[in-house]
Image (cartoon, rainbow, N blue to C red; front, side):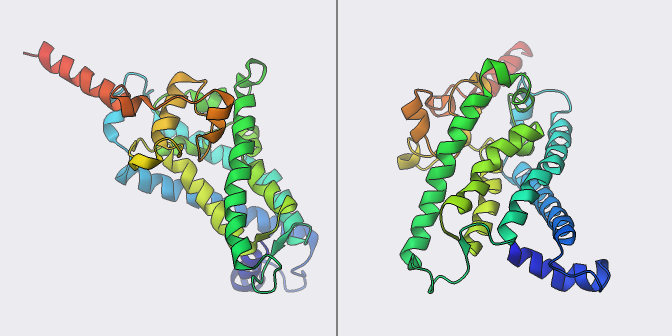
Length: 281
């Protein structure tokens, strides 16, 4: 986040916001700046990509499903924006620790001992590590002693829209995002790659709530897409994974998507519409 902070300082904070006597490396100034940048950035990604997905990808017929609740989209957005606001506080603490040089993030690929091949391996490592951690965190969130206090807020949306992607209890949301922030403290990662992956994981989270159940044939058994995650919302104890189906298979919680068996929410709506048409004859 130091690059983002430097750009924000150069173009906005130093010339227009803070007094010239306040050093850019001051602890309080950096914390305030990081909080503003993190909050605005996360809200823009959530609302911007969420809106694009809702209007151009999401199948609006799903809103006719009996389990789609009244004023659901408004409730999702309210919960999502509030969650991001509160999640930003502990997130900023981790970003601040990174900015102060305590992580294993690096700048120059050519000077790194890992080189270009190591950079690509670090992307795979990030996806594997975060998918594994989120699976188990998510699994724990479904334990009966925790669920009703934290994760239940997310599961009131049985037929989610893209705006449900960030609609969590703030503590639940932060805990599930924690592996993204821990990775660069444990393993080397290029700063540009880290920022790109941070944006990617937010967009991915939106995409698995978008109601578009299409997955290229060979990847159906590998990728945990919207069809898999739709069954998680409907049937509760299945498909906890974030990107892949690996940990669900190993943990015995994998469920082949109902939508790919002709028994999904789209199929249920078509049946209801067909029944309604017959009764009107």
